[in-house]
Length: 426
Ligand code: NAP
Ligand code: ZN
Ligand code: ZN
Image 1 (cartoon, rainbow, N blue to C red):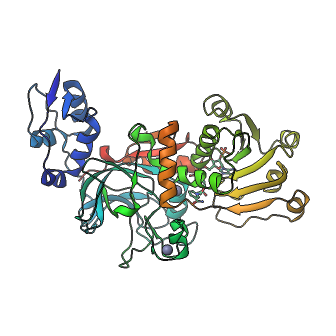
Image 2 (image 1 turned 45 degrees about the horizontal axis):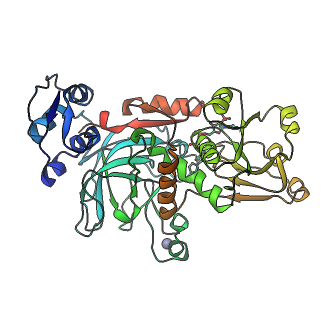
Image 3 (image 1 turned 45 degrees about the vertical axis):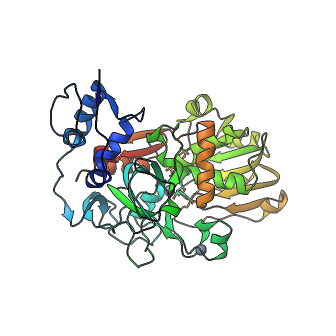
């Protein structure tokens, strides 16, 4: 049995963006017709009323009524409910803030899912020493377009949209010119940064964002939406060095150190590109899954000297995703002549690297930070083509503080993703 719901007007979308995002995702055939049971389940999951869905046609306002939920009382003032930390305890709690009105170049997006990156944790705890509180983290954002400025073309209401680690750049410098805008000195980060007007930026642990359309990414429709959000940081941060350092040729022997959010994406990209992938991990907890599900070719435990030595000089390149200070020398020993190691993890303290192993095999050390907007779109299209998504654990917003504790303990396979629609209520 199915129910036809009237299509909303632009004004109705604007007034109830949360319900429009749910409507869009439920409307799988794009004909505004919903299975009665699916609508009943959605009302139970997202709404607060225990109303029974009856057969027949519904006005859009009746659909909204089924799904609307009353807000919870919280600190702050404004139109956007977020989850913020007020100090470096990093504890997140509901907090209201005001977003700017969409300008002529802007897209208003309702956040549906937001990934939990280890960088969120570093910044919540001020481990890099640069956090301005209150901070609203979140730079792995998957949402739905609910409004846009008059100069925005090519987007329409209901489109799936992604936002990653930055939402603006100077658009004039050398880095911007060559489309490496992630390296622009004027890059505006999605949170813990200042926009061009000098206002603080707040991330995706929130109901909605207003972002210039140039920094919005298109999400391939075939990808499972709840598993897409982490591509916007974990995905691009591992895809970009594979491309830039030319580690993307079939047969290349790639090592991935740390099988967390970033690391498991590096394995997935490596396999999709035809590489021979070796995971280097701290324990055997993830071994079976790495080999059987992620299809890594080899799995080494970094503390097992014998195993590491048996694989000496077995790799052409390494992506190091580790978030804490760790030994580099055993990793360098895995690299063959002319090998390279690219650091993408950001341990809070410097690490020591002796010169001798570098020169003995003519090794190079590099770094890489997220990726430009053009390359991020290229990565998303690659994911669409190869059906690459993140393996994640979906959590309600209310679980976030526990999730962060588990992330510290390395207890997640491989990314927490917040179901914002279901938990950020206004
Ligand atoms: P994550 O999910 O916590 O994964 C990090 C992995 O590192 C863990 O799963 C663990 O893997 C390993 N690890 C943790 N502690 C370790 C230790 N003491 N010694 C050795 N290995 C250890 O974190 P993530 O979100 O992937 O982020 C990883 C790092 O990249 C963070 O520092 C983050 O800030 C940074 N990052 C950088 C960029 C960039 O633009 N370059 C972008 C995003 C994130 P095993 O269980 O396999 O040992
Ligand atoms: Zn990140
Ligand atoms: Zn620039």
